[in-house]
Length: 580
Ligand code: ADP
Ligand code: MG
Image (tube, rainbow, N blue to C red):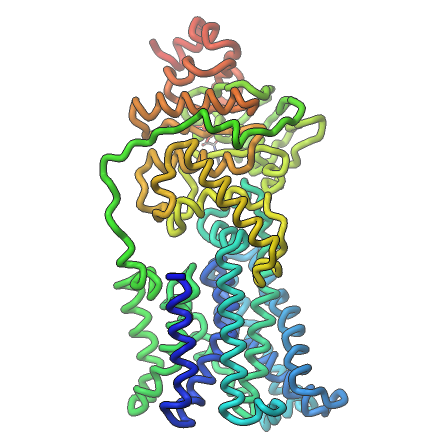
């Protein structure tokens, strides 16, 4: 309820506005509502998925022309305006994907440049294709049927649509899709390891965002009543983009307020029209420098109560059977004859390794001996030149890390990879992404399967947090946690996959002696539930205390393998590595 209140206030203000001001302000408010229809969708692309789509005005242009031309009936038989608006949404969806596709290959500025390039192309086509668009002379915008043909009626229409968009994008944001987008933005490698298929998710979001932008374009053409290519300026595109930055990424309310502010600002600054671009720039600089989290962070300040400083992590391994209840037939992960080089360096040099279910398998060796690379081969991040990995008699394909989660393999990272801006609970819930069954549309509309997915994921995440001893921190932002807590948090996220195999990369690094002891108890209990654990560690005590099997690597090769007692007695290991 507390989260919905600000939105209701904005809506109430918007409904009251026409009764307390004049037509001019209704016009401005209509414009803000139309911009928000576009920005709300773009927010999922920029604010959540972190893709720098700065040329999104292209889709507004496309939608404006599609609607206008269809309604004018110069090319096709005349189409009723509302139908034309829907058709524009369809065209926008297709081109949203076309503009977005480069994001699967290109990063940051390179992708930004392609969206700008597309915006230029659309404007140039609109100029050149005179028989359809009227070229530089332009084309008349559509007029909506009654009761939306008056300025007040049209305002209510746009407001209703804007409210619908707010509701849908907020629903998406608070679903497994929204969490996955943020994971792709802030922890891409971790996102892949929990089975998030980046390509499919981004295409879905580009589709949705493109459709909203084009519908906004149709409304824009209606509002302008006549459009020419120069109505769609680069400034407009910058406004959309900046609204999200100023509003704060990962928020819906922030960009909504920022869109309103940026639309209204030039009106107050009317005497300074020549300065309006300067004002945007100044506002952006102030926000980025003073409050990097944007308006959303400002609104959130009050909720940042200080955390207890001497808090202890007390795992409760006895709860683990509630999560790791997979009764699947035990079968080991097999690495056979794996060879992998980075340039001239042989990181792995003919390694055989068997990771049995229900056991803790220690993997030790000096720095640079290939331990992390071994994990990366199992998880599909590195492709071996020779040899391969199999599970249940089927190969684990190299170069497809997002397939590991479904095969029951979870991992943690040598440097924890978490979403600092998301809560601890969200960080764990994202680990259960692939368990969800509802589609993106079901989440947009809050249909029953969305509710079921959310309830299940939340319950599982709270249980996982209780297992590792972090449930008290569930609502806290992850970037406020201590290092040792991040390590346990990664384990909680990995548990969400109900893994048959759990690969831990130096989980004890940076932990206190007491925390290492508790970690040991937790890892042993995980193995006792039937999960096979591969434990990469430097703490010899921990390894010898809890491992059933130990493999010692040196220069990418197996130096020794056996029980902890055998390894402890191994002459070469003692002299080369243990050094005692
Ligand atoms: P460990 O985890 O045992 O400390 P790694 O598996 O990280 O060792 O590294 C094994 C060897 O491979 C090291 O010599 C390291 O420098 C090299 N290496 C690892 N990753 C890369 C990479 N992405 N590019 C080039 N060399 C790498
Ligand atoms: Mg390593």
